Length: 117
Image (cartoon, rainbow, N blue to C red; front, top):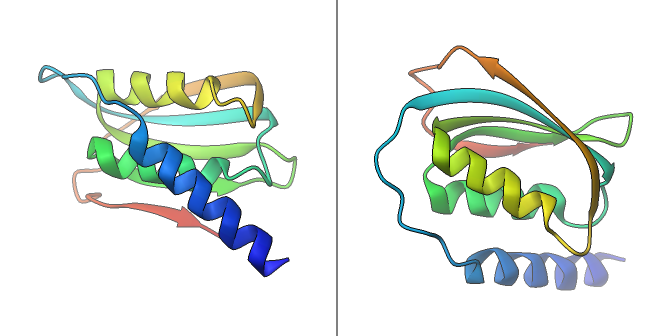
């Protein structure tokens, strides 16, 4: 089982690192809580989201929830967060059925992105 997870994680990271990022113009810094529902667990969803968030320079975290959804708090330029959400919605190995976005207050001290276990 560990070998399969290692292979999947390698595929996910390769996919995330090959995603072409557009040129972004400076925008407002925002923080959003995003909940993804559907087939989003056990498909490398959190790892891909975290890799893309780091490449985009976003801060925050991502975690699995008991109801089989994935929840993330994303902080950074609004256009970059919108791009990340669009990328995650279009993943072929996942099936995002619903996305709920909630605006939050910016946490100025939050500078990194992590996967919460």
